[in-house]
Image 1: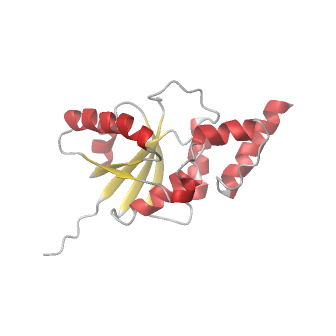
Image 2: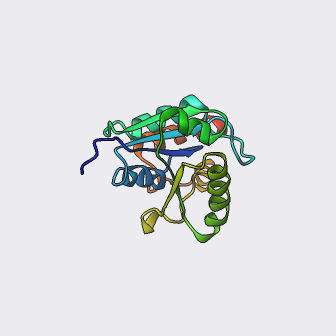
Length: 169
């Protein structure tokens, strides 16, 4: 029996900025889902001061995924599971770079499963050469004038340079 139901995956995060690791996870999610919604959280779950506004983060994501019409980018506020219900997500996808990510992500998945028992959570690891990469590291290196071109797409690199050159002036 063949199903024609579209499987929607939600890939949430702050994406401040979107890195090649994020891109890798989102694109690989299309191997298990027909549609991926990249959800940019307006409210951070961890105390971080964003380098980019919500509009800038969404613009970067839209540029990065302009070639893939099955990936949509949008902002959300409030509980992840409420947003997942709103968009009809079947699964939530999270990236795991290292074992240290697992404990936090596992706890969040368990809490979200309690809040929305039907929700499934999938953990993907990035390509090995991207496994150390985080948006925080990219921001820090860029802010200190380092070359982050191996870690982000050209539209993101352009915005990072603009952002941190303005900061220096």
